[in-house]
Image (cartoon, rainbow, N blue to C red; front, side, top):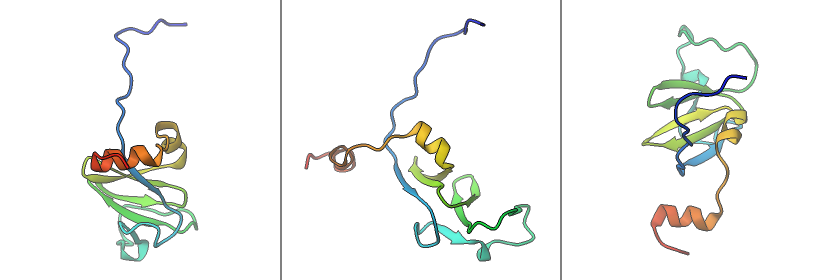
Length: 104
């Protein structure tokens, strides 16, 4: 086994807003693929209902169970597996305090 080199770091704690997407209407930032240019470089290879999320880095295809995260002034998609590895839900009271700075 190789010994790691360098210093150790841990991921900074960041509180984000997130919503899991399953169908059209679940999130106002997701549009239907009907609005997408069918001649685009994007190819859809399955029959799942999909949507398009226009994030800061461009458009992303959203599929059922994907998460939409609001962070640093923009929306970012996460596959469910990646989201649950990186984020955990915080209690409502902490969520309210971080948003308003006041205790409820």
